[in-house]
Length: 249
Image 1 (cartoon, helix red, strand yellow):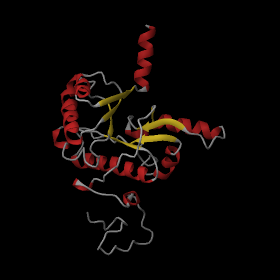
Image 2 (image 1 turned 120 degrees about the vertical axis):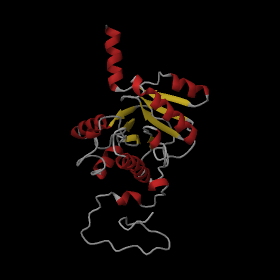
Image 3 (image 1 turned 60 degrees about the vertical axis):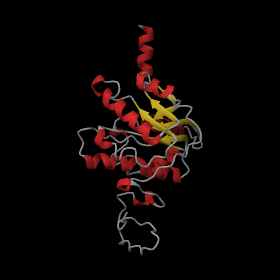
Image 4 (image 1 turned 180 degrees about the vertical axis):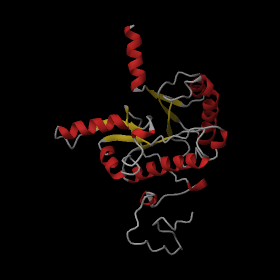
């Protein structure tokens, strides 16, 4: 990787002078010490040593953080991992976790760990945007791990042409996480694509544990259980509310 814009130390290469006043809008500082693979996607080590006891979304974590600080409890600790299986507008943008990463880090330090961001890679997105989303997932996770946060990699894939980069930067034989709260595999129209990508992910990464945020009540997960892969599911708040409603009907 040629890092003329990135202030990294490259063995045997004279580093360029950084122009005074240059603002790091690319979050190049996150990449210090990183290892890069295919398409320069960073390796994001799994730094979590145990499975989450609970998983909450970023907007839930922010609400907890605000409430604790309002009560004067700035040293609180929560056992939950923070995930991003929510609309991108709730965690991305000018005031989101990427552009205001240091403020986000202050929140993460109060929680047990983080499942890396789930930046959208919709099938009708240009390929460049989908690759960049994958890059940001890995780089943000790598940076969190370097800052002492327990990290588990989120994986998001699309149609088969995405398979050559969407599994990049994730260690083999580790814990990974996926979300099923969106369109796939819930929607029959998209289930075949989801299951094909899941099969490819397992083939390529060989995870020993898959965390599922959302329902894991699909045949594809039962097949993985029969292969000795541990499947650990956490219901989303929406699914929990729907379940309570059905119970009272």
